[in-house]
Image 1 (cartoon, rainbow, N blue to C red):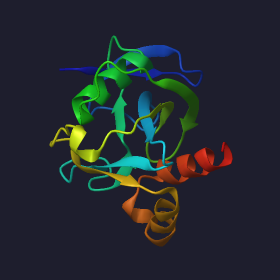
Image 2 (image 1 turned 180 degrees about the vertical axis):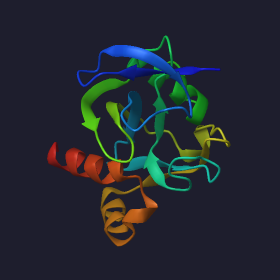
Image 3 (image 1 turned 180 degrees about the horizontal axis):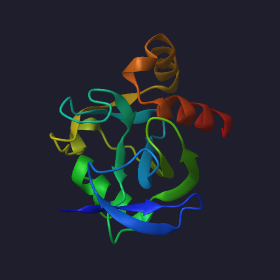
Length: 165
C-alpha cells in the first residue's frame, strides 16, 4: 500500500502512514495546480462523487497528496498527467501555505497557463467528474452564491490571483 509523508510544523518529514490511518494531529503534504488561460479564465475540476474528501465539489484543476518518495514537484507532475492528461509541461511554483482545520496539511501551489480547450484534456474518471473553464467574474459570482459547491481553497486562490493582477 502507498504511504503518505507525515511532516512536522516546519514541513520536515518525520514519518510515513498508510492512507486512511491519519490522526487529527498528523500533518501531510498536498500539491495543487491552478490553471489559467490567456483570457484570464480559470480551469477547475469537479471532484468525483465517489471521493472520500469533498465529493462533487469544484476545486483546483489538479490536486494530490504527496506520497512516499515524492517531492511536491514530483507529485504535481504525476497528478497532472493522471487527472487531466497534462504531459511534458513546466509549472511555476507558487506559494506554500499551512492549512489547519478538518484536514491538517501544507499545500504547495503550482501555476500554469495554457489555451488548451476542454476537449484536449483527458480526465481520470475515478478522480474527476468534469473540468470547466470559468471566467473570473462568473467564478466569483458562483462562489459567492454557492460556496458549498467549492473546496475552500478556491475562494482563497481566487482572492490571491485577483490581488496579484
